[in-house]
Image (cartoon, rainbow, N blue to C red; front, side, top):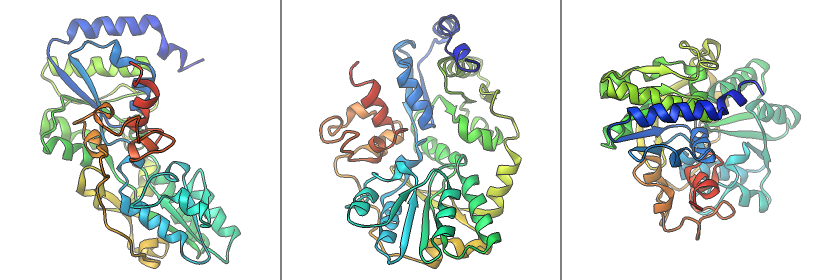
Length: 361
């Protein structure tokens, strides 16, 4: 199958591993900041074939995982409002808030509906004019343009019962925060999906300011191994830069139309990241001229503030300081069926990746 089989070629994998083993002389900690990369790395068993001096760690690349409890509490609070539908992505359904989840809110009678896109939520609003529809929007630069399109369309069409609870975040400030906190990172495996929208420019300050190589990667074994080889070459040549391995999908300039929609509808704000705290200018809020869609502005709710997960080390995992096997709850109290923390809920979470693919090693 084109673009699949050739990127899983045993011959290419063996060749890349040979080059990596020959070139990797020091010790390297490489962080992937994309949940899909985390899943692919462990699905294909890549850590087990890499040299022992190359350590791969997961970063804050899972949008569900970095979403704080306060945001979940707010989404749940809207289910308690009369004549209100909460239209949500399915992966938010089971994320625990302070004492509840959207799944439990639905079980107790809340009108919670699963959608696959913001436009689905907008269509629900059009079909239920007598009710308010709140869409909890999460995700990085990958999904923010879709939310922007829905907001813009709702205003143009005069849909007055559609609201967005905005939890979108942008990736570079979190990457900066991890380095500035002192976490040792020798190279970043940069997110492929985000970069199809943003292009390469959003990472260019990282090699300049921190001396850390950045390579935008695809999701197949050959993609990831070639990315690791590119990073090691940069380190060994003392030439940190931004490179694109995933050239079949990522253009240097990104997707201009998607970026234009983002900039039209959103503006940056300081935002809370689970495990990382408040990061300056890391989130997106809805601009003033679209505030009629902003659920926080139009329909404010009072909820509990952030609080720590008791015994859960999701925050330290998202920083790359620990891995899921270090957590005393992992596989015991915390499983995909009964998740304690967000890193186990999400299909892109590091804990779920370890549970599926690594706990038997």
